[in-house]
Image 1 (cartoon, helix red, strand yellow):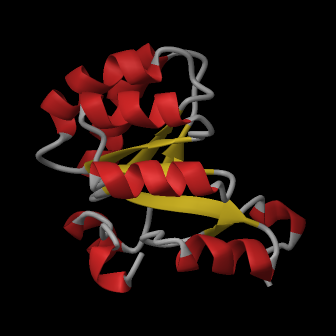
Image 2 (cartoon, rainbow, N blue to C red):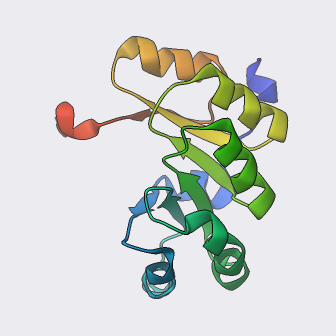
Length: 145
């Protein structure tokens, strides 16, 4: 894939240069948190699949908050979850791993993907395969320095 075919991050997310990650016990906890974040000027959030009900809640959350913030789906590790997130209207995809089939599926769907990696080789592989951005994951292993 060439850089010209690389689906970019949504405009608000790219401009903000910040994605707030939200996890909870259940997806019904998202709305009040999103309301608070939107009111505080946050323009991009990642809702994780580690929170039960995330994909099912996405359409309603996009309807309520999608005009104020980009909503991405994270902790995506399976192409079927990626496809469901795209169908439900996710603005972008985040994955904790660098996996070629996820990058290919995102490119085919025309959606930005941010894969995670820990080593320089993993991060480069994600970028070279067409990621909109890459993230160091888990960052706690290397620390903020």
